Amino acid sequence: MRIVVLAGGIGGARFLRGLQQAAPEADVTVIGNTGDDIHLFGLKVCPDLDTVMYTLGGGINEDQGWGRQDETFQVKSELAAYGVGPEWFGLGDRDFATHIVRTQMLSAGYPLSAVTEALCDRWKPGVRLLPMSDDRVETHVAVTVDGERKVIHFQEYWVRLRASVAAEAVVPVGADQAEPAPGVLEAIASADVILFPPSNPVVSVGTILAVPGIREAIAEAGVPVVGLSPIVGDAPVRGMADKVLAAVGVEATAAAVARHYGSGLLDGWLVDLVDEASVPAVEEAGIVCKAVPLMMTDVDAAAEMARAALALAEEVRA
Ligand code: GDP
Ligand code: CA
Image 1: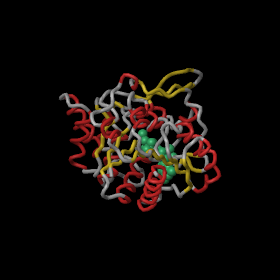
Image 2: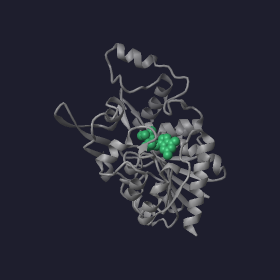
Image 3: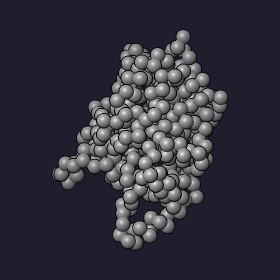
Image 4: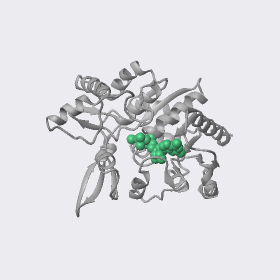
């Protein structure tokens, strides 16, 4: 079975690990969000691609959910000693090597998709990891700070400000000019199932869908498309997804997120048991909905979610 998954960082990566346990024989292609990418210290950093690669490759800091395990921060503190920041973005020594290799290859002319493949040669994530695009796309957020309206990089909003002010607009800059990376549309067209893991609907899945051609390809693939809610009990499980949902006028509820994707994209949607009462509202929108446990407390729990998603896919296919 060929499965395509549109993934952000932590939510996507943890779900993928469950999917691998649930369907070890499946051929999985991951289309990763690159709207979070940022240039720091002259290096190209791709946080979501790396979270997927490290998580599936056994190198992730489990407690944190991002970055390398057994990490140290010597380079960062040496940079700080020179007064070189930003100090708010935690790049560890081990992680730096990934960004150096990536930047070196990009400078030599390789596209991001080829670079990602080369990095995965080491990590062997067991999936085909494709960036959504080889073109530069950067998510920016409009905010008002101290009475001044400005537009900042998503990472500055998320990591430095911790989404403490309202996001007035979220814009994937460059997305409208971007092309899907090689293999993306082909993977969608030949998929048996397409899954939206519990990733951020705006700045992860939404950004991938903003690359012209990807949304259309999914809608026209003619195979079951099933999503899992990142919102449980009217709040994000981790992080501040409610802030960016508000920016696009979507309530932070499992049903509102399903309706935001819409029946033009989604055939099936899983909500957590605590949101069972929202099942009819999702079904009214023309999306088959079921309530199952949706907390990825460990890999077994994530695998159970993946089984439920694949079962729902077969149900809507029939
Ligand atoms: P990011 O790029 O690291 O922010 O990660 P993603 O976009 O892939 O996923 C972030 C989303 O995952 C957040 O909105 C969380 O609510 C959601 N999430 C994280 N852990 C869980 C979980 O155990 N269950 C569910 N249902 N959602 C989760
Ligand atoms: Ca992310």
